[in-house]
Image (cartoon, rainbow, N blue to C red; front, side, top):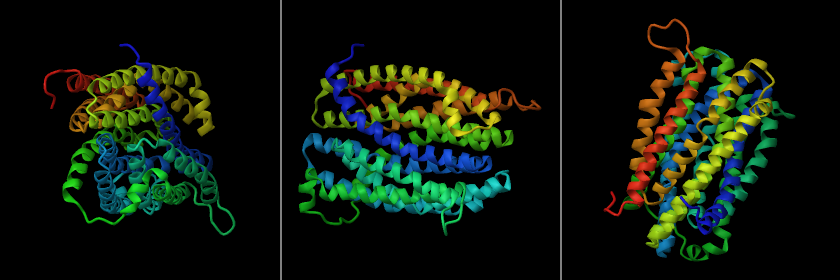
Length: 452
């Protein structure tokens, strides 16, 4: 497979601002983890469990809205600005419904958390963090709507600036609410949730300010009006977005759900798992940003009916994915200990976390390939296949294998590989997903027979 330099340049120029923006947004979670870990090991464990709930739920509803990116990109390829405006407004209607859905889940955490065998102090921190995040869900999703609208137009620098601003704001907010300042009491891990919710408000205000004042959107503003729900467009977005959301949930949910399965192994294991998740989520933003750029590019080329360019773009992106995966794997192996030391100085937690990062290095190439392949398929609205492949790979194969490797069979009296067993299963699941999605890529884009 030969690298097309022109297509590579186009993708990388689009992806670079996305990388910075995604790193900044994910960095907010990293700051939460570091601040909580600096406050106490119990607060770190509480934030770990809260993140295990918040992250998959938030990514699921964001994934539904992610349907806006290929939708808007295709309207740009075909030159249909009216359809783009309608899509944006229907995205806002979706935001209202999704915010209500998430708010109920988070605010009822005191009820369903009682079903887990948690230490009392950890449970209090987990519940407080989730209740604080509930107040930030509406601005968070309002930001996602306008973000995907900007990205569908190829204006990735706009969201980069907003994400950097929120990341910077989040740091002093964390310091104030975690450790206390003046009349504001120290909240520990709960303060991380308060700080992040406030940062989301700034992100939403900034993203929509750009919409109303950016020169590229002058035509949209000339006939701005609040539109009633258009159920045909809403159904189109849901038909594409729900499978995207499910596929994201299957992967991210696997990683975060493990936090609840390993609670019997103790606070040290739970804290180490959170550190490894925090780091791998951060570096995952590199291939994910390239995949997001690919979605926009594929959507645009699909709308313009440029089949040959579309194929070259996908092949180029897959080459870049392999190179990126190798680089990330090597960096993880070399700097694992240094990375863990940024999160904690507890030797027991650090020892476990370093081992998990070594295992994480094994799946970086597969992870990059699967997310790039999914990005290409999203660009043409082929999201159901991604959902099916990832569900089989992660939940029907990786999860039961991981549980077996962790705890052994039903006759075992202890643990086998412990938490490492689950991380070994990640390698298996991501590799199967990569193979399955590559097959779908070949069938959809490089098969001259009619695709489905």
